Length: 84
Image (cartoon, rainbow, N blue to C red; front, side, top):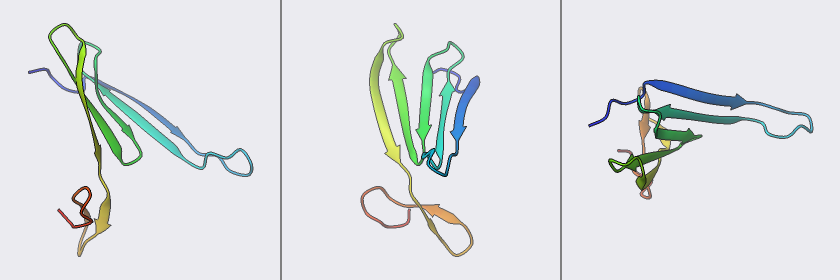
């Protein structure tokens, strides 16, 4: 198993008044060998899995939406609208 997130890269932008793009947040986490582990864009995370040759064998996209609970925000189950 690989060690996760030896380094991280982030982009954050905010514009207004006809420069459009109000906000854009993208972050990346990488394995120690430089292969991407996770890309986060807003509330969507894409996890990447590699074979031993460093080739992408799968990608999984998870959308996490949070709802206000009694004392904190809780993740919702994807596609159900129910708190997890």
